[in-house]
Length: 190
Image (cartoon, rainbow, N blue to C red; front, top):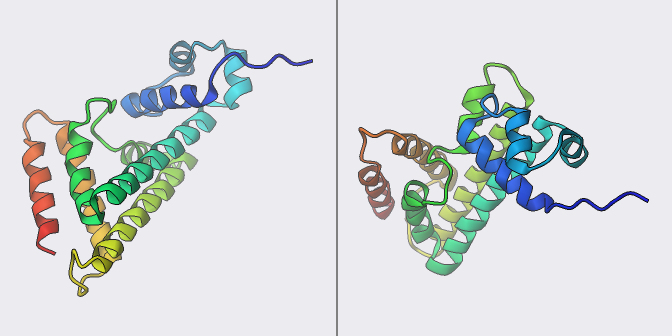
């Protein structure tokens, strides 16, 4: 009879996500993963199959948590306030392993290699944009922004602004807080 694994798979995916988020796909070796997850090679392969399979799970987790956080912000504060809060959260949350977006980092790193994970990162970025679109629609329905705006176009611009903001937050010569405030102020003008 096979032994039951002595680890929390969900917790391991979260730890792997943080490692991949910090170091990227190429910068994270199997040995790094085995060390971080406290798994021997056989246990690693039994649990996840491959580095790429674990990376895909980590990106999925990253996306699910982002959507859940935005939905929670919207339910608590309203859709427009959620969009504004996200600009500050992504650059100030101390628990994040990196300020830059894991999905954008992955896409930039792996697209030139035509790696399948680049397409998965793009798919997850599309899911995030759909979440933003939904929040802009909800903000319109609540009368928080004008009806003359296209929610999908607003979402695409917002996502682009966030990606730039998050990359700027990695730099020491840029005040990302000011950029976040500008993005939030732009939302107030809609």
